[in-house]
Image (cartoon, rainbow, N blue to C red; front, side):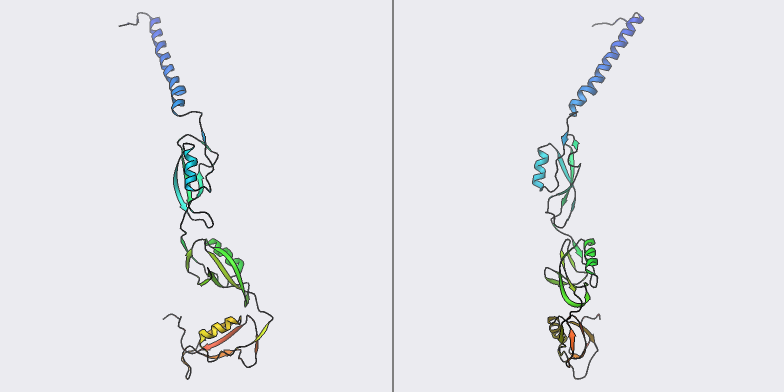
Length: 258
């Protein structure tokens, strides 16, 4: 077995120098050879643009670059294709190491249900803003002759009239029925006395008039739900298209709370 002489001070310094040299060789080999090799130092991968891709397209794009992914969130966006990439982190163009995980937000396939706000009586522009803040979309505007010019009188979804507070899928397109103001066209006031209130509603609506109903309780000689008087009367009077006819109806309002 080889022995190292330590009989003199020079021998001791020589041995210390050898130990220090070995330490430095190991130190620099670890940090400048082993670590760069084991961590692919200097080698980076550019993150691709994933926004708008389907899940299959995204997986292929990341696999080709030896990158991984994780879906961190799922949200519904009106008009966006379901199950596509909405956002990503790191952003496209970032330089990352091989195997880096990309966090994704994808577009939900099912729209959550939201409540339709009460926009009846609001101006069209105000109603549009209110819908937008509730995640809904303003659709077409149907104008009818009515006193309330440019005000929302009714709302529809898929051609069906709905009431404020109804639950509809987020992103639904809401159609406005709005007033144009009074027309210059004059028509004869229809005679509604003796008619059932629901029949009168159909007749008046067909003539582009508005019916306002007031229930007055039981009236002798009149069946419940029939009109007993109206203003203006029908004796040769004329009314503007879009104007209101006020009627008194026998009985109690069937929609009134108990």
